[in-house]
Image (cartoon, rainbow, N blue to C red; front, side, top):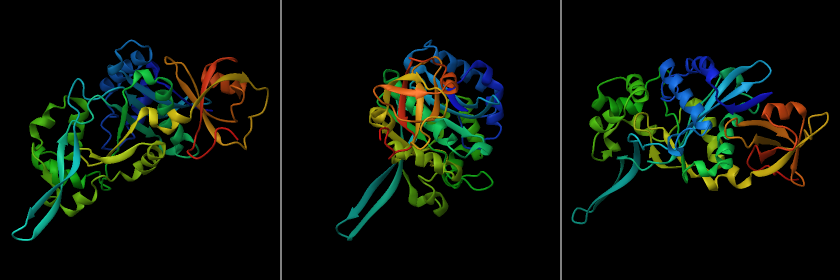
Length: 347
């Protein structure tokens, strides 16, 4: 059975193995053991309630309970930009007009922005290529949203997700080559590494402080503003279906889109229900019913599985194996929601 769960101290080796499979562009999952070790420690403390809410970094893994293999990772940061500035470009418009000459021109611009300071952030989503089928990707992405729905008091109103921007086959970024390289004097991968491993003050020190007119960028750079990496297309689609939208903010390095939404207005928050878990003897439940996310309500040992069935009369039936996967017993509360938008939780 595939289980989405909170990370543990013993998962560091598995996390390193996943990080080695990630290419450039994901700053929060670099194969640096010290950095990842510190992040695991912070995540464990976050789940245990040992940190102030704004400092929490909730990291989750996807595990095959049969083999014990960790096949994916995703995370949810409670707040960004509070201890060091969090930068994006805001895509805007400036109008240049002259009545005397009869000229009216609207120009696209990029403004360096800190608009998302204090927002929660979905990040660090990676699923091993061999497991990109069935419900794994959706469970890995949406499990975080079910956690947020169950612990609304831990998060601010706004939730964002920086999506990996478009890159060529060799890992280079047309946007970076046209803009960032002129100010940083280094390759995209090198700047990406520095951003992930150290303070972000160099961004403010080196990036242009005035609006950038995109007319001065190459055609290739302009074309990828707000475009995701080919491997990130499914992840973007999943989040948009849940209520996160692109509102004109992009990453300053590769121009990947930033999606945003209000936690209380997301589909999973609005539609999820609490029920009492009841032991179901034998069988897998109603496999003809639409798949559902079933999560326990434990912050310290949060777990989610994909199940089948419908809550009724305040209860949701689970097999002994499903109860064990969730780390709960008969009579414990669970939070349930349809896995896919459009599916009904009740027939």
